[in-house]
Image (cartoon, rainbow, N blue to C red; front, side, top):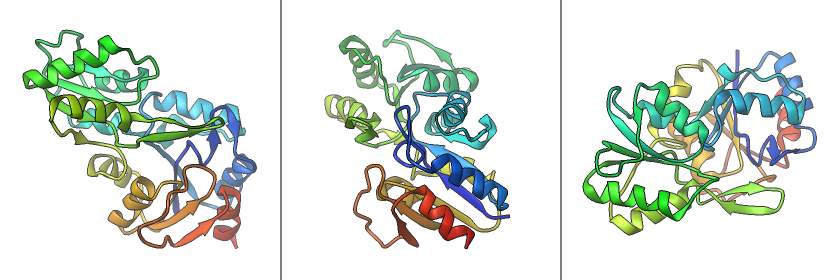
Length: 247
């Protein structure tokens, strides 16, 4: 059974708005025998939240088990029983806690700083991350996306926050999300046979597909960065890809 690994922001929806035809495309692919997985570098939401959003915005009944996030990937890098400061949203904090890692805001004692997209970012919390990494704490980042697409345009992504910590400390982080190995390992455990990945970013979505030898599809509905190498197909949107795959 073929598998489609589908990005979310900029591919399925923008904010709370469905990209036209996405829900119908997902339903048609599912009915056509495709296994659907959703893979997002947005670490601010849990898989449960992401699945609920897919269903709410598009009408397609996605399941939490079908969602893989950079937050989950980042958590796999941590050792249970250690402590961490999370500069990120609820999705990242939940994944870290579920790993058996104690959450702490004490920069002077945490073992690891984990950074992702933080919608509630403050200077004080950024300072805790910088102080902890400067003291020698391990530095783990959910992903390096500098922006993410919204109906208003491109907003700062996790990579912008990661860059602030890196610039202030001079310490390079360990990356977990697309296209890096931790999230690829999570996806590989859920896929077999022919695999396609669809996304709007060459340096994350398509790069991950190339690293795994998967077929790649670039859509023009999100960031739509210029690919370093030609994708297997370039299409207008997810609906067009569904028509291509089901022909």
